[in-house]
Image (cartoon, rainbow, N blue to C red):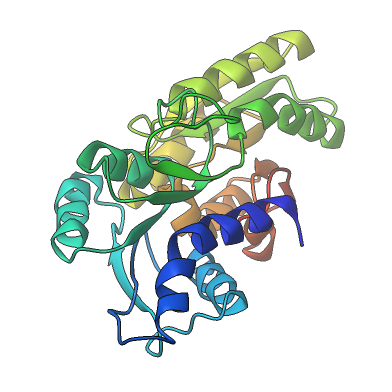
Length: 265
């Protein structure tokens, strides 16, 4: 078992074990998990598998209330409020923005975060060793990987002198991503073009801007909006003949050229 999945399992176990043990003595309310993420996919599947490893089966001895953002981050306060009103015993959040919204809404309900790039830099936790408060979980530490991503992309395309960086400007980790890539690009003698996209509707124009600026390679930063729209993004990169670097293996499965980063929990 990899370390990140172990952390996720133990975090869940710490919250849920007591109700399960008491169930042998007297009827109790089934524990309820509130799950908040952008869209259905790999993360909710992993959560259900992890709960199964702990002896919890949805519909049998546990309830999972799911809420999907679907790229509309302005809905986050409403969705978190719905979960709080349902009196969930635990929240599991996928992505930095969902995690921040949950933390801002409650200081008492335990929160297990996943798929978060920079929890310290975005203010989710005080430190990785001592997160404090009511939040714990796993982090991919995305910005720290930016230099290595660009280095590997340069090895694949040695003549590249301009890199385009696709970012979601409203994403909490966007500034950190851009800063780390600019530092790495400067060391490699590569010019950086930052291209913004807030939603799937912006992608076509973003790639048109990349082509107009004659960028030779592309780095797609970590963002839940981009991950949800990964097939469209990899298709656009192919259409514009842009060798591109992504974060997770799922991007390669969707047709992307290269990935380097943490594995989703």
